[in-house]
Amino acid sequence: MKNGPLVLAFHALFIAFIVAPLAIVCVVAFTPTGYIALPTEGLSLRWFRAILDNPRFIHAFWLSLGLGLVSSVIATALAIPAALAIARFRFPGRDAVSAFLLSPLMIPHIVLGVSFLRFFSIAGINGTFAGLAIGHVIVILPFALRLVLAAATGMDPAVERAAVSLGASRLTVFRRVTLPLILPGIVSGWLLAFITSFDELTMSVFISNPSTTPLPVRMFLYIQDNIDPLVAAVSALLIAVTAVLMLVLDRLVGLERLFVGKGSH
Amino acid sequence: MLRARRIAPYLLSAPALTVYALFLVVPLASMALIGFQHFDFYGGVKPGFTFENYAQIFGDGYYWEIFGRTFWIAALVTVICGVIGTFEAIVLHRMANPWKAVFLLIVLGPLLISVVVRTLGWALLFGSTGLVNKALLGLGVLSEPIQFMYSVTGVVVALTHVLVPFVVISVWASLQRINPAIERAAISLGAGQATVLRRVIVPLAMPGILSGSVIVFALAASAFATPAIIGGRRLKVIATAAYDEFLNTLNWPLGASLAVLLLAANVVVLYASNRLIERRYRAVFAEGAV
Image (cartoon, rainbow over all chains, first blue to last red; front, side):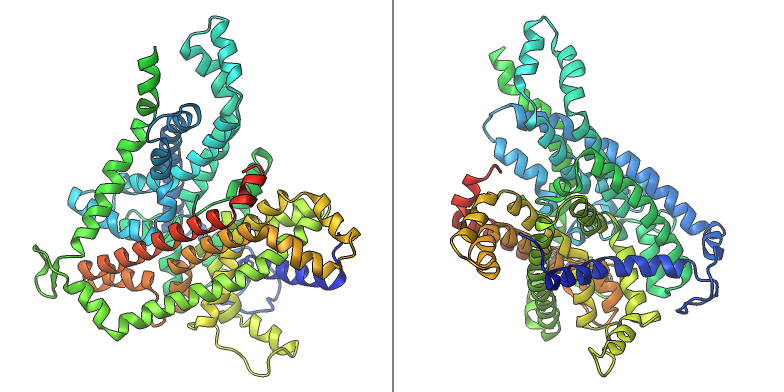
């Protein structure tokens, strides 16, 4: 069925609603003046240059990058064998294992944040990189697990049996048959886990300290004090980077498959 | 060999399960426990067991107001997202490629962008530039500017933007499972566009609409960044109230009790509604490839 003119008008408004806040961030980022004024008189890169003179944002960016890489690699490494167990075996407690491993999706991040604040304070690692990495692994593991699980479930087990019957060892089967077949799921699961870690604010805000502050936390604390073109410039850069990663993910799995059932199962 | 097959799945999932036991179950339990301890403004947290934090929350109108506001905001956001998200999913479903793929990317893409960035966009539109009010006044939709910053209206608009993609994707997924012949059959039997939508498409997409809305409700009720930035200090919701208790007042027992209540409400809503949706729409789920 075709969309009528009224329906298309709704669609245009909806798209405008979705794009507007992101567009305004990008426009404000090019402000030539020292304050926010619209319409702007000309465009300027001064606020992007100003980021380079602001070591707190630079430091936070590197921290978030490192945190995202470390935690997404650990989460994916834990998710792969668990996904294979759930996809390949029928065992008592299988549903419980899968529900348990996906359960962080149902827990508000604020609850995880206060729990980790308490736990890490006792353990003496609050505000450290290790503490943040542990918290992030818990939060992002379900995302990696879901995509690896989908790849492993979709794979034909007969291919593995064929390899075994041809004399391949367990390890060879995994390395030469299983792994290549589920690789797209692993890569996209890892990438989604990385992005989720890189964006995480609500939990991290509790377990960071002034010297160990991931980028979203740094930006949040900055926005609470003042909103200026500098933080818009940082945000515009993030939008640009995310757009590139989004296209990669869309190519790999399709964005629509990435988010079905997010937040529950 | 058989025995190996029996223990293999446990061995494979053991690393992840161990990490969860140590770093999820233990922290959650210790947080729940601290909610039953006494807090003293001079001496800090005292050992022991008491229900006084819960008594304080339930006995104080201040917290009732925060709970009421949180669920009111979540309910409004859920209804708005449910309606416009469903409609947009149907519009997208009827489009042809390449537009379909392009717009799907535009609608879902923002989910990957940090909530801080998206909320900053709304703070700019509402506050510093006042663009939303200028546009609405210019179009004649409003005669007087609306207060968006530090108001429920502003938080609802921004949260709707943050969460509506979840409804679009959920409805989209269930529309994909509808056999297009059903729609054509309805038309050939004389049904008009509106009738097909109301009697065929929406009922078949209902599991998607409901499960998308449930996700939106849960995420809206526990949202932190958007209410903190748009709502500010005074317009508190449960998440921002817990934040203040933990990081400003340092009353951890009270903050932990708030967190426990939020978690309990969240789990009950998600679990109960998922069960309900599954039971009510078992036929629809069984029919499509889930």
